[in-house]
Length: 409
Image (cartoon, rainbow, N blue to C red; front, top):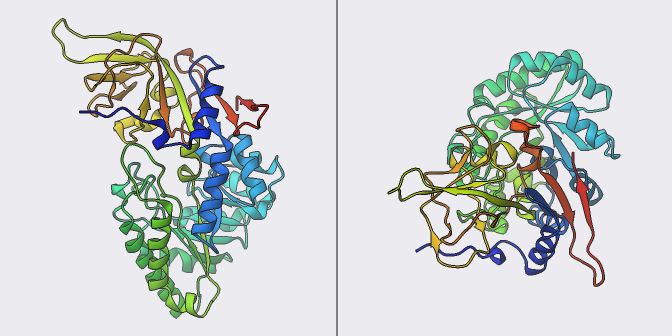
């Protein structure tokens, strides 16, 4: 029997009440993000990974209130485009705190980033590396390797990004010949990675590359562990403390001299989902409930937002959000949950049965919990005419007030 979702399993009581009060003010669909949650997540990550520099992955949630908060907390930033870069520079983030972390970039964009003061770039191909050497001379380079086993992540990233360790060595050597500074290696174990062991096998590859480059007289000093730390959805994950203990152990086992003798070793992380995912709730409303035949068991629930307007990560049913609805009665798993557009792909859950109350009705609100990452930032612009969802930012209320900021960017 399905168990009704309890929001307090995902949010602190004060955070949930703050977000719910804000949600009552607005017409669906929209996203509410609690900035206090992001602050706590950032400070906890700093505590769990001491000595590690955090480069927030802007793509997870590029809203100005989020960026300004992390800027003030001292975070660095990983950008995927010059547009994200301009967003950061526009709020006073210095270029020394920005890494251009996309392997796919135009020469003109590399040149633009260089002119703005960016000096840290990633690559995984010879063509891109030569472009960087021309457009951003003498910059620092780290090469991204693929992470085998990353297909165990809920949102795998291993096919499009990264290269084999042997090719990474070739590229690091080439970078030096081209006048760049080969500083290290990066990897990403896949977004929402619940198998901590994937870090172990990938860090061992990094050690292999470091050993080879040291023998060539070109020692490396940087390890970029990317993202992958999970937010909490329906599928259970370990706590961040557990991830930190295990990942730190893997690093110390493979780099014992660096840790024991305190040799220069720069370790950075690029979290996105783990910082902002648990800070959001996406509010939607039931538009229609229907059946496809007179004797059909399944019922279709159509909501006022879907895959093309905030819920793209339900594509292939990869990310399984916990759903909360205040409608009374027992839960029913015979619901197909779909969005409002005239596109047959706009179905969030058909084979994975995410239960909803049996007595749910048109007009009922359905809250998508822990949805602060990759929702508003993935929204299309006007598909079928539906506008991108709005986002409202809250902090836990002071005794006499509750403040919120509307963001349409």
